Length: 433
Image 1 (cartoon, helix red, strand yellow):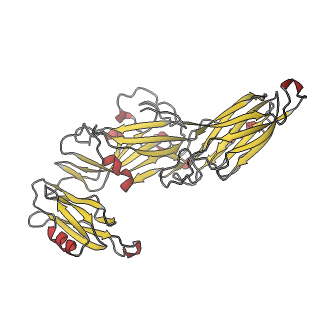
Image 2 (cartoon, rainbow, N blue to C red):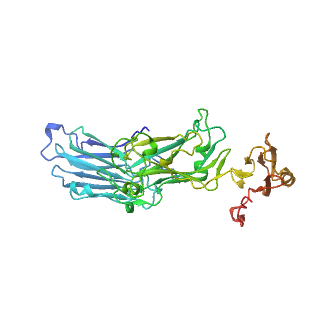
Image 3 (cartoon, one colour):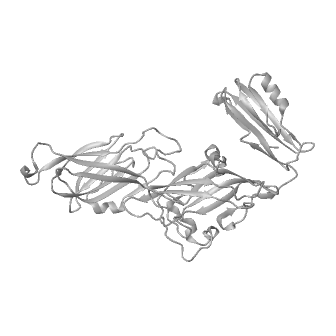
């Protein structure tokens, strides 16, 4: 997996308050320093944090002895300020961005114990937490200091490559999440989780429509990408050689099982012989390499999951496949959902996956005809007869019942709502029978 850091900057430029030349300056002459913070897009995003947002910044300036000279806090999107510093003196600078509160210290050494805490793993209303540090900067007439803001979080991008799966094997991703996701991070130093109490029970997660892109195959037969985020967790290397990814796993008694960060995936499975009554749970531990467990701040990790053959081998990186059962006489699975809610003009493709493939199937066209007469939607049956494309045409609620088997073994009821207010949904979506 590759990784790359992205950087923001705080720029300090010295501006003379008068027109005096450098040689005319008396000792301890101060100049006005303009501090500018690179701003980003301040639009709020729900599950996707705005990686470039800067809502507040604490800027701390220390003299050569490490004593605090200035502690500034820029709020409400403010990105510039000015401060007077002594020409010829050397200073150290620290910054904390998007903490939501002022950070300060009387001496620079106090910052060694500065910790940022998260209320919950997907809260980024202030923007992503960032920090910066630079030392021994001498202020001169044309001084310009650049503080490079770095994120305290790692970005983890995940995609699926199904090209090595056997024919007829389907693996549909229902959810992804980070396990052992740190609750806090040491700001000015390497962060290492030492106990499970320091982790969220479930970290940053995606599910439902958010993982649909992992089931969308592109031209290169690789899925789209979803992204997760987590605070730094540096756990170092694994002792001894590892010959395969399947060996990067820890037993029940290994303490690293509770502190090393991992990705967990819920996957719906179907093949000619087996299917999942409940999702398979895949787990794999993160790191820079097969033998490493570090998740480093301000880095981007790209992970491609490549299941092979029937997708059920390699128990070392899977924690639970107890939901797998042998395929019964009739298997039916609705897609994308039994509940459809849309607006006039939307096109929706619904249908069922059925196994065995030669199982008798009724797509429910009689129900579609009835809904069409009421003006809810127009429809076009798929060539294979296992689904239909609905073009929503008018407000209302309709039902389509699709069934499989001889005479009828299994059935699925679809509910279609068009331009109805949310408070009209006073019922539970029917389940497969």
